Image (cartoon, rainbow, N blue to C red):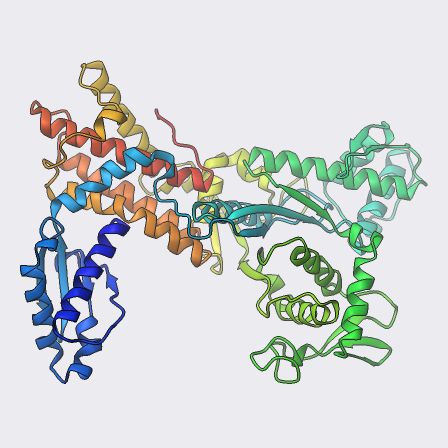
Length: 578
């Protein structure tokens, strides 16, 4: 249903309510679960019946009668019927349904977009992998979800910044450096203790060989990092290994079609004193205390609906600084998120694994405490989180748990090499983020309608084939002319179903964006492809009757456009031949 048609129907119902003296009420129009019940359903009669001191069915009957005699409803509403205890089922006129074709062909790539949040900035932070190894399937799911979500946000007018946070400081980086150092010594002929190698897998030996060859890598700040070849130069090994792996991650992300606007270094938070400033701000807030040689934050009193001094969102207070003087994981996260807000991002969405669930409450609590002391008005629910569960990879009916290169986990590059970018991106975005997902490699490679990527791309290629056949026979229809032709021949059941599916696209984008749910777009596209295939199997397109043929060609052009638009948001290609 086109948004303007839905609004027009709601306005007509409001007019009918005013005509019977009903109080103002929210008119909500929903799509009936059973298609035979019509295109829209409304329950407003049940809402206002008590105020009118009438039976809901009496009120619904009065509304239906008013709609039937209102001239403004002509050409928009085909029928309005009473149902159940007071529901109203409505069917739109065919002309109203056909109008979507003209809108799609006029707006093209912009169809479905809105300016609802124009001028507002949002940051989506995702992947944010430690530079200690190749990107794994969890990072791959983040990349698919985060990039699709960023694209969805842009369709609603948001000015989107994609950010990658590098954890390039701490124990894991030290472990990486020492692992490479041991492999360097081993390559030089020394015996090493394998138990002391924290990161195993072939990639550590690859870095060691590059280090001994005195190769040069580029650091994230753009500075060259040249390997000294000296096995005792641990700091040089550390910087070279981080730069090497950063470059490898960049190559994998490029192959996946994912780009970032900002790369933020955890090390910069320490170098610029932001971590210490955040800690001091939390102390100044009066919401910390010393116990057992450690510094604690009263997270049980922060972040709840009662605000400071009342019950918070966390189940226990959290250690900020351990007894050995080092900070716990969430402290630099608080400092990092202070910078996000200070950079002008009032809305931030973090796409992370569900293993980060425990940090959500403490990061938000830390932000409330630090923000209060710094005079930074951080909202209580800042930032938003989209947490995803991990992915199991299935191949040949068995779970794949190990990659030779890493020695432990399946990588993003493995998935791309096995099934390609398109299938990888679609599959990883096609389920709710908070559900576990089994990535079936064999299914992703199959050329059957059970493979959703093949099914969608085949629908697009099939449309292109029909349009090409029409052009070869001198019957082609360009978008510019198609937008102005008579669409009244589009009245068959499968044609009307496809028209309604196209019209649902703008509302789908708005809902998927609001609910941070890229999987909804995947479901919609599968339904759209199914409606197209059903239409194609039921109706011939290149018929002799010119009005019918051209109307159906225009419908195909619109369907192709919406398929392209939706696939592009997911980062999936739309091939013209298969």
